[in-house]
Image (cartoon, rainbow, N blue to C red):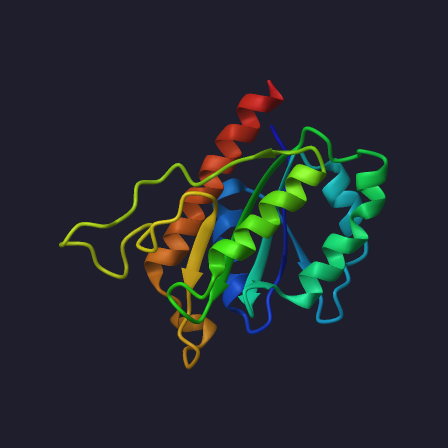
Amino acid sequence: MAKIAVVFHSGYGHTQRLAQAVAEGASAELVAIDADGNLPEGGWETLAAANAIVFGTPTYMAGPSWQFKKFADASSKPWFSQAWKDKLFAGFTNSASTNGDKQVTLDYLFHLAMQHGGLWVGTGMMPANSKAATRNDVNWIGTSSGAMAQSPSDASAAEMFPGDLETGRQFGQRIAQAAARLAT
């Protein structure tokens, strides 16, 4: 069975809930980046042992949080030794606005994975874009490159849209299926 790690930063708890949904779908281990941008003890070892690494960060000012960026910069050590080459990668993000420039953040995560010599997994989901679609449908935001969620700025993490969390869970399942195929 493939080992999957979800490494993420969450400023207010919304991205953490999305990380938990992705991890649930993928049967993955969570590695939380703390408020100072550091991994927990054993975090680097967890990522080294993983067959797939899923990046998660809120989108702040059209990019990842500085805490995630600090982690990304620190990943130059495994980059230098090509330790993550040919691992599977995927990513997700959350912001307060429906668009919020989340695609820029996903592009950042994609390019980070490519610098590590990784293989990227997109959502593989059709968008919920019919007249009958509602905000709680899976992939209502209509993303392909990674999971996106939207949390109004005045909403608590407990008030996240169920469709966004289900999108994350199904995305995690897709990552796990791809990792299993590569592990054989």
